[in-house]
Picture 1 (tube, rainbow, N blue to C red):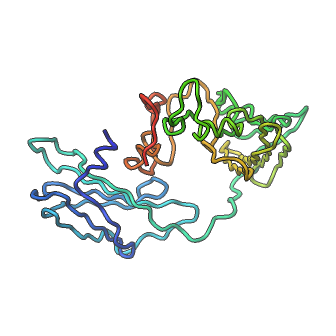
Picture 2: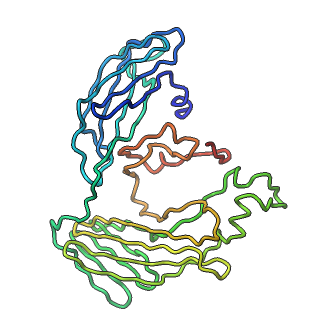
Picture 3: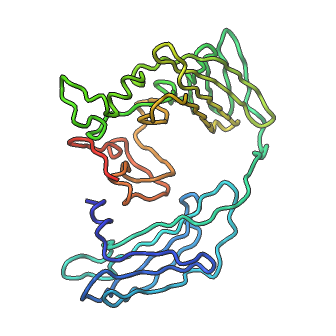
Length: 325
């Protein structure tokens, strides 16, 4: 319903310019004047509101309203994402809805900083690193992580005395097939031209992982762990990945993953990672598109921001998975 509501909203937005920050709201009503509604706008930095405002909206049928929100944008910071969030809602109770009902919304990505923040500030000393019997152990302020040198995997993560991991983070190159992947295949007769058949032929479902190198280093302000993996199918090395963990003394873990795919491989169903966390985790806080699942059939209604959900709320039921573009 939320996707249908977004797709069928009667107010459309345009970002006219950023200096000054100017938007246009266009009414798609043929006879009704948009009134008794308010626009709330927010300028966010990595999902956190840094500027905001509110004003009343009044637009004639098929008319538009041009509004300047800011004379100039705040100076962007390196490695930060900036967005303009727009939300129109009822200012008061009406016969058909209560005050506060959101009737239209939009999000625009704004220009970021042209330079990168290349180095981390050494605010604290690096956590300790010890390597013994093929295990690299990193300890800091109330946390402990362990890596297995043979498998190259993060096998243990304890914070404030509580284990966080049930299984190690690993590459994930597969997902459940949808109707479009299966095509016109029958239960006992696979169409060889479908994506599902192509993936099976290429061995995507049967990839075998091996660790080709593992290194752990202690730097001035952090520990750096690098693992390289190769995935083989039908006796051929077809995918390579490099994982780089940066762990500071407070237990914050940054992970960068680089994936290279052989030219003969088909487009993969997914390029991502998977792991399982402790059963004690009941809530997820993330920065990105959300708050709901946002495959292509629900992408229009999602927005980039700071989202917090329970594990149960993150599950989405589908009668049959399909793809809409």
